[in-house]
Length: 118
Image 1: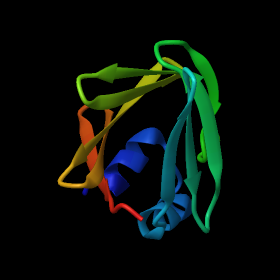
Image 2 (image 1 turned 45 degrees about the vertical axis):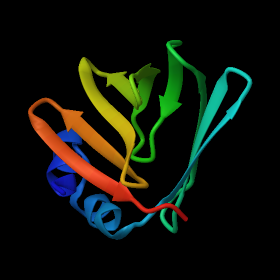
Image 3 (image 1 turned 120 degrees about the vertical axis):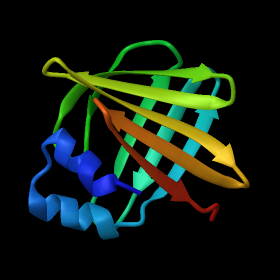
């Protein structure tokens, strides 16, 4: 829902947005001690980030942004903030009705992606 507008707000080019709209990634979130790992796998690109809650880390995104990122927990939500070039986007991941719902926000643009459990 509204994902193309979200990608436009990020400055992603037309061709990459079209690929992003049809890509159905598999996302795996795991924890080892106090380190979390989020793996995103798709036919377009695979990424993996590892982090500790509340600690800044460097993140290179699939659309080639270099960000300072932080992930925290707010109640039952995992909140992921990326900052780059005086810009900021936030991903909020939560489980609703057995599905992972990810709300993506940049400025006043909000998109929602829903992922089924594999």
